[in-house]
Length: 254
Image (cartoon, rainbow, N blue to C red; front, side, top):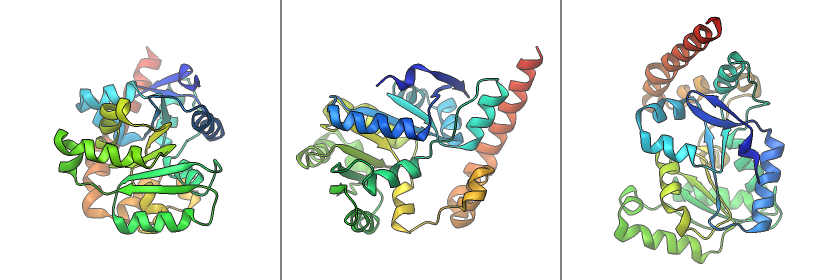
């Protein structure tokens, strides 16, 4: 359970130098060993780096995660430019699919976030595999942030006795929420999965593998949700990536 010991600094965040297979085995071990409080996994992409630069609390949540993985080709590019390669991208969508499809036989999974429609579709998908969706909550932002209501959500999660909590609240909320309530959650592993449940449910389409290989999955996502994502990618993320590349090259020359 020490994958986070070998890390690479990318955009100011320490990213574990791991493969997806190592992450899968790490999760399976955590489910078997039942650590308490549970292990917390952050799937870090370029937007996470942008947000962490603005929000010290979010940066702290990523730094305190038990495992922070590179969910994005740009992180691999930035690490390589520094001369410290990351072995491969570990996509939250792939890890989520593996879990829901029964990658850890008998694993009990709870879904937090997204919509009832999406959760029902994920439950139907899991029914044909060897994992079990033991419950879900689509509690409102107010309920999740209000101390007088969040305890009810946590009781609901714990009452279902899950091994894994998949938190689909988006960044930075999902990682902040997990960090704030980790000690109260009776789960072995909690993972921030963003829009991965929407992909599994078919509400959104995943980019073709060739686009993912060349680092253009973001463009495919933006075409599906332009109003929501254009500013994130074109105003925030791409300029940040350009600045980081220039700064990294300048440091290497010096």
